[in-house]
Image (cartoon, rainbow, N blue to C red):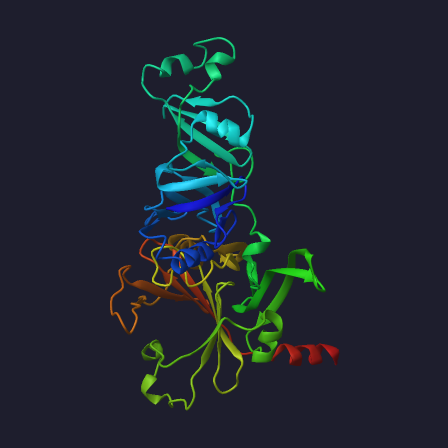
Amino acid sequence: MLDLEVVPERSLGNEQWEFALGMPLAQAISILQKHCRIIKNVQVLYSEQTPLSHDLILNLTQDGIKLLFDACNQRLKVIEVYDLSKVKLKYCGVHFNTQAIAPTIEQIDQSFGATHPGVYNAAEQLFHLNFRGLSFSFQLDSWNEAPKYEPNFAHGLASLQIPHGATVKRMYIYAGNNLQDTKAPVMPLACFLGNVYAECVDVLRDGVGPLGLRLRLLTAGCGPGVMADAKVRAVERNIYFGDSCQDVLSALGSPHKVFYKSEDKMKIHSPSPHKQVPSKCNDYFFNYFTLGVDLLFDSSTHLVKKFVLHTNFPGHYNFNIYHRCDFKIPLVIKKGAAAQREDCTLTTYSKWDQIQELLGHPMEKPVVLHRSSSANNTNPFGSTFCFGLQRMIFEVMQNNHIASVTLYGAPRPSSRARAEAIGH
């Protein structure tokens, strides 16, 4: 049985690990994988057709805990303990819920101190006792007790008192004063772990197509040797098609992984695949998992020739490999006989039918992409469909959401060459 410390408005954990509000989904899953011998039977719950309309949930069925992640930013929003009989809980080092200590209203009052009177929810037959960043729900013993806690049944504070001996049915940890209105907080400093994260990614483009990316990066920087001064710092970096490896490394730092392409599965869709001379060396990707971005370099010139932006929707084969890339792609749409220009923006959350309304329907049929590992040739999530429009390839899932966007561009002079050209 897990023995966990409750920190209101912050976290639930022990000396080895901690689920902290604002923590990225991938980090929580990493904790569960690392401690899989202790934390077993974890479910991932999400809406297959409308993944943005419901929280993404990790359900620790053996321990009676749910971790609710915001559907958009995929950071931890609420920690719910829905079965207190499966876990030991303490506050400031003192237990208030064990097999020997029942979490009664008297015990909660003793452990956490005074708060406002409880709020009765008639539909759920539950009393809610709220502290800042922490709520307890109490189950009434019988239907007979319920009427006297209805509003206006009794006068004064008697109607707001939780009956003696009532035990906690659920506990919630969240940010702020109101569980219904809570939002996932910004990522805590403890979750950076030396990594750089992308707050947002803007696609830079001209009238023809994409030119590169502008990334707003977040990192936990600190003064020289002073950890107390640590704080989140934001920096902006631009990378372009035609940038060298050195340009990218100086802008973004080292990638998490370098992946060499062993084969080009899209080669057959080029105009004359049989005429292409086989390359002696392979193109290679820089994978930046915490940015949700891949960069493809040409094997002969070592310049950027492709960007891949990942949306990390659940139900996709690559789910949880990348953090979600929160991108914006500006479009200039010409409408009417007068060719009036209308500015539009595609985002991580745009659906394929919305994109087609803006860009028009592709002339060619989609390429069907079926991912599977070499060890296990199955993919439980099914195929995706790739459509090409305006030097962009949209990988579309079966629920109409975008799994990834690949940006192509003619190689341009490197950033150093551009700077020298400007200087002259």
